[in-house]
Length: 125
Image (tube, rainbow, N blue to C red; front, side, top):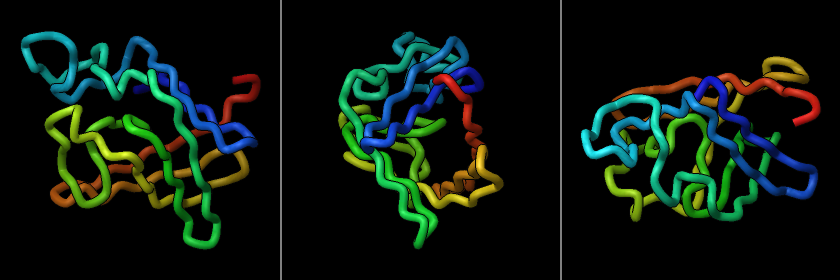
């Protein structure tokens, strides 16, 4: 996930581009079901169209569309793990904290485990 690019445009469109270090969390297309960096299956492969909603009053960021996610494809608030790609939700809402004008911290309360991810703005992408 260290080289993934998450893009939010001014029209509400959200896209992601997986790099070579996308964490598969046992969801890879490989048959061994290992937790490692891997090619992810549909719908987490970025093939669908996605949108987003940023709500600064509630400090939330929602990515919308079957397979939309940030950082971990099968983890979301209230769920430790979505085991089957066909059960991927149509949207995921993240709680956020603005660190500065170029960074936000996303928080996921995944029932049995909490996750935090920092997104930083990269100009030109």
